[in-house]
Image (cartoon, rainbow, N blue to C red; front, side):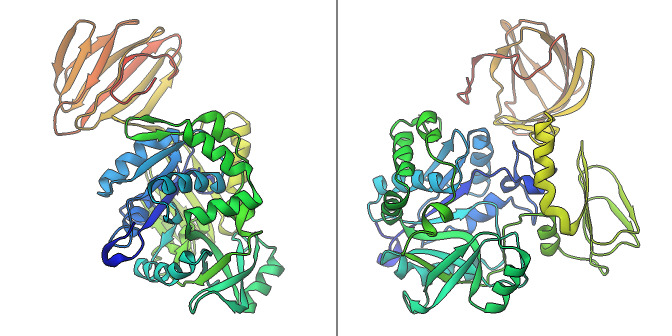
Amino acid sequence: MAADGGAPTIWPVLMAGGTGTRLWPASRELFPKQFMALTGDATMLEDTARRLSGPLFGPPVVLCNDEHRFIAAEQLRAAAIEPAAIILEPVGRNTAPAAAVAALYLVQRDAEAVMLLAPADHVIADGPGLIKGIGMALPAALGGSLVTFGIPPDRAETGYGYIERDQHVMVTEDVSAVARFTEKPDADKAREFLASGHHYWNSGIFLMRAATYLAELERFAPDIPAAARSALENAHADLDFLRLDRAGFEAAPNISIDYAVMEPTDKGAVVPLDIGWSDVGSWAALWELGDKDDTGNVLHGDVEALRVSDCYLRSDKGLLAVVGLDDMVVVVTDDTVLVTRKNASQEVKTLVERLRDAGRSEPVTHTTTYRPWGSFRNIDAGAGFQVKRITVKPGGCLSLQKHARRAEHWVVVVGTATVTRGEEVVELHANQSTTIPIGMAHRLENRTQEDLHLIEVQSGDYLGEDDIERIEDIYGRS
C-alpha cells in the first residue's frame, strides 16, 4: 500500500493506555495525562495525532484502556483525525502485547505495513524534525531493522532508559546499529553515558515493518503473539471501537517492547534526533518544559509567589499563595494538594501506590468524572445525600435507567433539558426542576446545540455509581 508518490504508507500506532501516576494529582487513573492539556491548549493525544498525520501516514491505530474509550474518541474528533481503529485493551499489559495486537491488525490490512509506535503522552517541540527523522529511518525499517529514535542527553538523567549506538556498524547512511539498551541506570552510570557521546535516551518511538516485529516476537517471546492473536481473533466491534477478548489478552505477559524484543534482537537500529523530546514523566519535567518567570518559576492558574524561585506552582482551584520556597512543586486540585521537592518528584508514583493500597479514591478519579454524554462533578456529600453538577454536551443522552436505592432532584441552571419520567417526556429550562423517585425509569437528554448544566441532588441509603439499571443506552454500555 502506498501514499502519495509511491512511498510506503506509515501507519501510526498511538499508545494511549498509560495511567500517568507520576503526574498525580492532575493525572489520575480514569483521566490520565495523555488526555490532558498540560503543555498547551491541545491535549497530548490530540498533539500526537496531529503530528503524525499528512501524506506520509495512514490513519492511526489507537490503543487505549476500555475506561478511556469515549475520551479518546472525542479528542480524536476534536483534532479532526479519523482513526483506522480504536482498539480497547481490557487490562494493562505494557507495550509489547499492545504493539503485537496493532501489528496483527495492520498486516491483515496491509501485508507490507510499516508501523510507527508512538506513545500518546510525550512532548515533541520540533514536529518537522521528527518527520525528517522518520524519513531517515524508513529505508532501514524497509530493510528489516527495528528502528528507534535516540534523544541526545543533556544531563545525567536516571529516569530514562539509554540506547548505545554501535560506533562501527552503520545500517544506512543515517542509521546506526544498536549496541545495547540499558534501563534506567544509577547516577554514576548515567554520568558515564552522558560523557560517552554515543549513548542516547530511549524515546520509546519505534519504526518497523509490522511483520518484522511479529517475527522477532516469535523468536524471543512467542507467548506474546499467541495471546495477541487470540485477543484479536475473538475481539468484537462495540460501536466505533474494537474490544479485545479479555481472556486472550490477559494471557500475555506484562512486558515492554524494550525487554521483549529490542534487547535480544540483532535487528535493532537507532537514529539520533534532537527534537525537543520529553516523556513528561514528572513534575520536574513539566517545570523544564514550562515558560519561566524572572526567578525561574512556572506558574499555572491563580498563583501569587513571594520570594520563590525555580518552583512549579499549579492551582486548578482557587488562589495558591506561596512564600519563601525554592526548587519545589506545589499542585492544587479540587480535592488534593501535592507538595514535593523537584528532585523528589519521581517518587510521586510510590506515594500514589501507597494511597491506592489504602483504598483511597484520589489515585483513581477526579472530582469531575467524564462520560460519553458529558461529565459530572461532585460538589458536596454527607449522610444520605450527594450533590453533583452535571454537564450534558449538545446531542448528549444519558441512558434510560432507574435506581433501586436513591431518588434524584434536578435543577436546570443553563440550557434546556429533555427529561423522560416514566411515561412522560418534559422540557425543563433554567430555574425549573423535577424529581425522580426511587425505582422510576428516567432519562436526561440535551437536544440543543448548547451545553446543558444542571444540579443534581441525590438522596437515599446508598449513593454508589453501581446503583444503576440501564434499560436503553445509545453508547452500548451494559
